[in-house]
Image 1: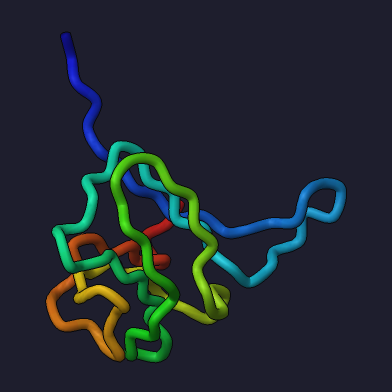
Image 2: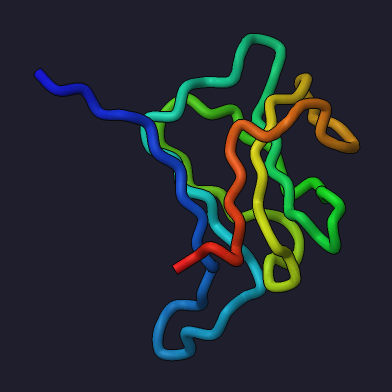
Length: 105
């Protein structure tokens, strides 16, 4: 039997039709994501003018869909780091995932 592998994607948040205008938000969607280690969380970051700005927390562990906090329309990337419970003021480690908006299709 073939096992599913974990995946993560980021997309713009949009209003339902017929408006379909951007909300200046991004949504991160995960499938089969491993839970964060005990005592830690995944922290989401928007890269704004070279700085990483917190965009929320997630526990991981399965399938999730989370609207990131902050203005994604002015961000150049989204990063995911592993941080202590409650999150951090700035990333403590390199991202475990980084979505560069300039490479989006």
